[in-house]
Length: 155
Image (cartoon, rainbow, N blue to C red; front, side, top):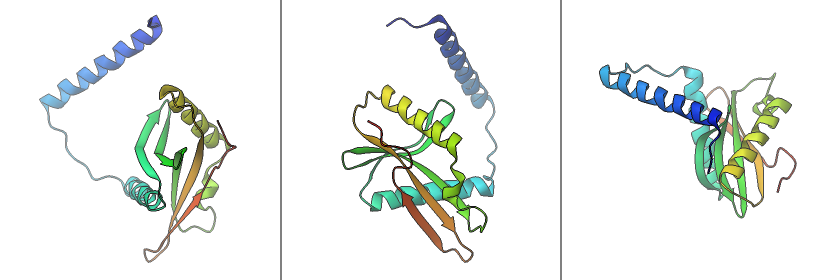
């Protein structure tokens, strides 16, 4: 397989950055900081969504997969179909529910990321994009809603 010179340079830069980061990490231990509350909330929502999907019979394959500039929150299998699940979490808000925060740009990015992932994995079967909307109400009550196939069916 012949690698494009531009791709090779990018790969070499990436490896150099990794090596540089590893050398710095060996020199001085990192201070651990608490995660900001919104990031901790998002992580907890993704964990809850993964457990919810598993409870519905989905098999969780991967979580937090970076594809280009997009992240796929959960990649799972629902029977014979591959599912790319986007998790959206909000505290109870009368203005915007979690499912209302996925617009056309995000849908396009999710679709492109799923296409790239399936190409890279040589996956030729059916797949879809689902949305798991998590709403946290005052008092700790949580509502989880699964919206299947938020885009058109794709082969």
